[in-house]
Length: 245
Image (cartoon, rainbow, N blue to C red; front, top):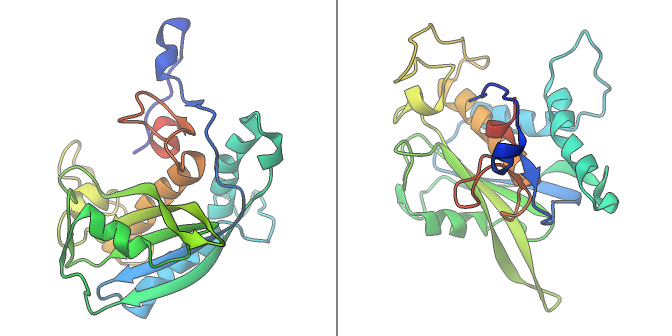
């Protein structure tokens, strides 16, 4: 959800969205998708189309805006604000491998550790692994206090060295809590009861997932390891998509 802009003074600098000197993701980064549960090919295409649209090679014009690529350029601007000038313009995202687990290998009720286990199936170097759970899969905290999350972990040793990889989890909320996690394409559970927007792909659950993937992807590249860009306390940070207009 987008929050209103606010003027910051010296007295509330602790609330300023700022860089905490930690490493950001740089270089060529593959976005690998781990599909857990039943997804139709048309549903998978909604997410893959979004990922490939992040770095569209075609230059956008004023007539074609807003676009995914234009929005992503705003996120990339944070790299220009870091002191590490080597990182400027070096982030290049691309769609990587897709792993299908439609047999529910870990069951239909997942813990946070099991989400990490699924994320570890993807590439563990220069990667963001996104776990996407189907509408009939329950995940710890899903709908109660989150629609998705992101984090990082050390992968297996590669040439004697262990590398950190970033991961994201997002669930399909259509049958569990669309009013919380698929807004504005579903009537909200709380707040003003204005009419929901028409889901652009006519799939409330998947279009809601796109919103959450976008938000978490922005948070992942700007705060991949918990010491990048964020606002407020490290234990409960506001990241790019929630702290900025």
